[in-house]
Image (tube, rainbow, N blue to C red; front, side, top):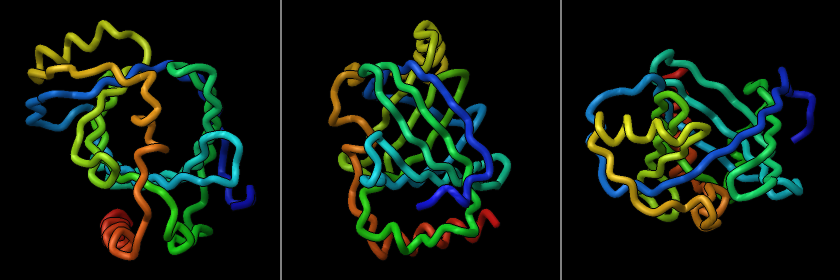
Length: 180
């Protein structure tokens, strides 16, 4: 993928910790809710992925390319390129590793539910910044934290991917029609 379809670029520094979730009673929508499809590209040195973010509140979709340069297990520098979706051929993702997840955001906490991944149907909490906000979730949503998997590379999304196949493409295209 060339750079001709980039609309704008944003640089981001992130510090995050990741936790498995043993149980949660989410029950309602959070501040922001998304369905995310992301494909991992192996032609770049950094962790690079193409993401389609379906915003369930605004009924919109965004395409981005994210290149992540890890400084440590917790810290990374990211370049986020917002893409012109009309230049992307979804069939070109067939055979690539990908994950599909629902993401719920409240403050700087991202609750991911992995729909298509390995392993699948698990919850993982990513906390960016202030770790003390986790107690808010524990009280409000009866959240029970599991293991801290920040340093476990098997829980990096790039290592949780499954091959994108025709049935995934069909589901993706159906979902995409709903957000046009």
